Length: 271
Length: 67
Image (tube, rainbow over all chains, first blue to last red; front, side, top):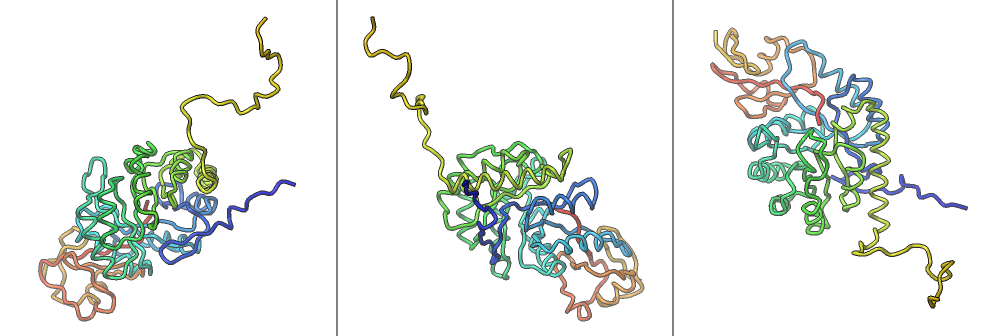
């Protein structure tokens, strides 16, 4: 009888929570709120990212959105998207903690408006302050090993290097860099955040030994976001299973998989 | 009358008042938002003890979709 592995039994811990899914999903860019809700449910994700924006008097749209998210019963990860300095990010994180009732914060401090590359200096500075204030910081950073080291030095237990530019869908630009961070920090929770465009990118990140992937556009901008959410659910599980199973060593030359002993039509001596 | 900046727009209010009074004056009746004054977070617990002065800048933020 074939024994199937129950991937749901493979729980992990992040930010003091024990979860099953290793897919972190965004809540933006979906065709409709109902589609967003269906996609998040189908993805199996247990962490959803949200944001804060200016609100006008009497505007109840934010409340409606928040009610949908709350009804999902999963962990909330507010972001500081749009912040360009440590001070802005710290204030936004403090506001998010009050509104969303969580000490988790996806720290984004943008250093370049064109490619939305994070500002490593301001990100480290904000991380240090927020950790002292009791936040669980999920810092969005590049795949730079030294920046990851600085974030770990100030107390980050979670680091989220980009795969490639936010919303680009280009996948993992520098898998070797990501692998170097993984090997350097086996004790940290590492999430590939940004740039993932298709399920195979997520699988690749998981095969590198990353603890999870965070994505939004790849699902929300698919022709069928709900089906794509299901695809990413499977892709992340497959990548994790592959990592845990241990991939084979690459070889420089071909090596037949079918036994050579008993090969038909083979003669020891030529006529 | 004093001038303040609310979410990037300059407006006028009757007089200097505390944050709780300003929120009522501006008719923010809904719940689930957070406020910053001159770039610094103001917790709900301190609304009544935090005064708004001329040229102060207020940001009022609420939940939205995010990635």
